[in-house]
Length: 580
Image (cartoon, rainbow, N blue to C red):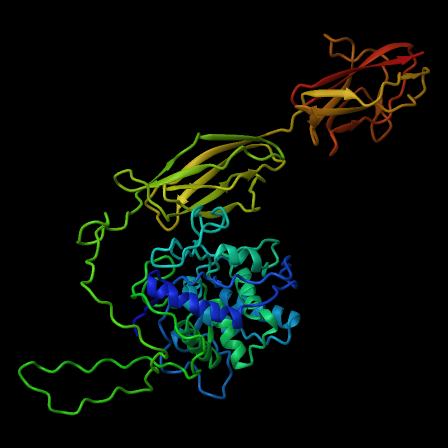
């Protein structure tokens, strides 16, 4: 069956009123209750989803149904080997994420009875199982999965809530990731399903666990039909959506099998992020429909030859037809239909073609520098343009840190993907420098476009520095010949007035301010074997910028001696020691 791309919420006087009434009724009876406080570590324990916003913001979904043949015979195992109908195959990492989410929530909320097959059904209609399993070993999608811009043009109107953090859009929100969470819903329900310390809607482990907790909200028992329907409708407020998810749910319960990542079957037709191909629909009634499995409609009878009238009785379609939608049908619109608009939105004609990215160019300086342990001043950025040099939006750009360095993007990763905005620009997150000094490369590439050259920025990490150095005490340092100094030498390093931690330093006895040679029989330190040392290297200030030297021993010669302490960055301190 060809796939249809469901249209969930459209604008217009009539549909808006009906949608508002339907959503209000659904919210009164179906809105999930308190968010979880278990494995995912959610914080707002009494938060409730907004009554007019579902998990996905009611953005589009795949409406293709499974084949009429079931993936397994009744009574056999629900976990088939890696064979059987292709539609029954679920990519390995995606399948593992669903099963882990079921196990986690079952341990935390045993009364919910959430089945992983329900998560698989939702994942199928939302993203085609993460675009057929296009995820890395940690479960993160190889490229962003974004729904359309929710700007009120054909869909809901949801202003930006995450400053573009997840969806790359600072004006409006978009559904994100394999389970298609809008950022505002993710902020409340996001989970850490893979234990990496982050809650990422683009990670199937995180997204599946968040979806499971959302479905279980309000102490639902998903083994009860009414609770099951309420949970699915809370995810997306559409009876068509409910029927589609239930169909895949029963299909997967009847049997499925694991396939390699990247080899899952994608639904036919456009996926998340593409414009809808179906006309606006009026939301269904608030009463859940029958749970009977909707079948594929049979193919239409072949048209008769015009020259030969057909006097036979039409053959009825095979299979059980899909029950008609309940409720009063919307009357046809009156008046002359408005012709389709061109790209300029003014005159009839063919819409302008979507711009195609042809180049990736720098939009900042070619170098960046930071001190070890600090952050680079700003993230590097690039612009995607077409052949005419015009900016191209919605282009996934992969940023990667390349080279011998322990620097990381602020989320703690060496690589991540950012989608270009309306101006064609994509900016990488700020880079946190590690302790390893030297140069490395920040590289930007267009995802899956090998013929578009990479853009490289040179980044450099310099050693930590200090521009000030002073003793922490003003006690005179004296000792008798052959004795040890009673007080330790301690100094604090600062940089621009603040403590300078982990700064490299050295200390040595010198003859004078202009002569770095060690004077004869000067005081000295001792090495591990007790041998005299008149210079120390590879010292470092502590976390508070303090440098404490080891014990100092006096020689047999009386006099005043100089100890010079130096730090990376040029700060120096000269200390007098008296042997008398």
